[in-house]
Length: 185
Image (cartoon, rainbow, N blue to C red; front, side):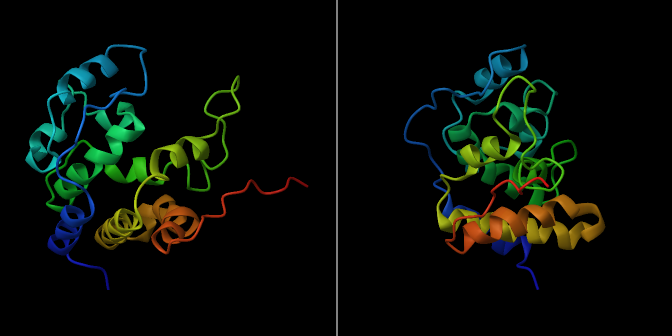
């Protein structure tokens, strides 16, 4: 039995500080294209994630709904509870926060290179993004992901289930996830 949406929102408010103490440098993880610059401009003055409206989160920046793809690691760790709370309230139509929480930990993306010319994998990227969360924050994310699966069913969330098993459950338990690449035969 998963927690209610209201209970998970309260858990997010307890686990994640509402206000940031300083500006994030960098605010975004890319300098290519217009979207990162638009996102940086939109989030620069957003110091309290509890004040962000679901309507704004669902379209930022300028109707592109791509903020979760371009926020820097530190910034996404601060703003993710706003996106999760909006989803828990049924207020997101265009943005799906589950993707950013499972990508890199699911079977189809785990250990895949981000670029053929670089050694960094999606798992490396995801770990850099989420390894700095506290155990309480990881537990809140587990509860959100379990709620999401209960809402949509396992069929819709195979990747989420894989990410829970390989990364999020161990993190929530205070155990180092075993994400070593399997030996090729």
